[in-house]
Image (cartoon, rainbow, N blue to C red):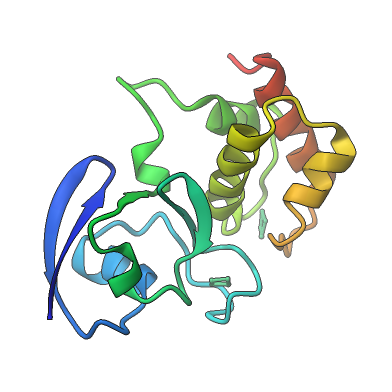
Length: 154
Ligand code: FES
Ligand code: FES
């Protein structure tokens, strides 16, 4: 089947089985490899992207659910060469080691801050608890989101 999906503001026509995962389409058909394949079962958050502003696990989201909707991936966050405040916060807080979880963490944080622009640390931890970091950088991730929320990231 053919689908029209809007990714990072650009329209794409993809032909695939409707049950194919959105992650697979993004990575293999559109060449957007920022979103990562971790568990493939909706458990780790490495593949998180936004659909109409809501964070979803793209590894378990059939592409048919993204048809006609706005998908945002990590590649779509920077504007005019300037990182999104959450991306900048992750850099400034040194909130990554291997970086594999980072795109998903950033996308989940963007969705969290859209809902709650000034979360407490407890709210950040709650909002991010579905994202797994095997390197254990959680305290720095909380600091990164806090920095982004305060506009402290430059
Ligand atoms: S790869 Fe999608 S949740 Fe783990
Ligand atoms: S920085 Fe390595 S998995 Fe999070």
